[in-house]
Amino acid sequence: MIKEHDRVALTEDMPEYGLKRGDMATVVMVHSIPGYELEFVTLDGETFAVISAFPHQVRAIGRREIAQARELEVA
Image (tube, rainbow, N blue to C red; front, side):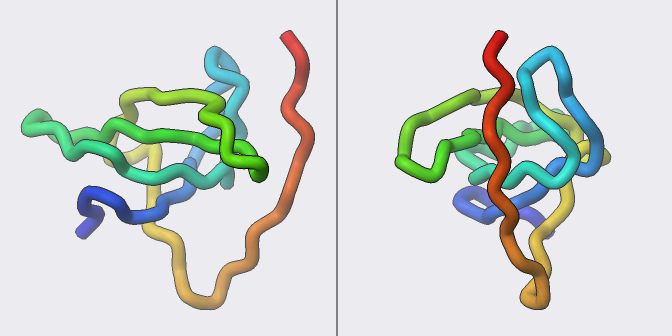
């Protein structure tokens, strides 16, 4: 079960926000209607996006996973 302050990864691209499958976020709120408020932060600590997502759009991060960096595309 995903809860507040958990780290999660996207399960699909969200091009309207400049986000891609696998991008990691922190859950900042669990909505009463199934879903989450997510904060995406750059490696230097700047908030890039805060979005709402449905449960099928995120997954918990496993212990045997490794992070990968990518440059943000400039709009």
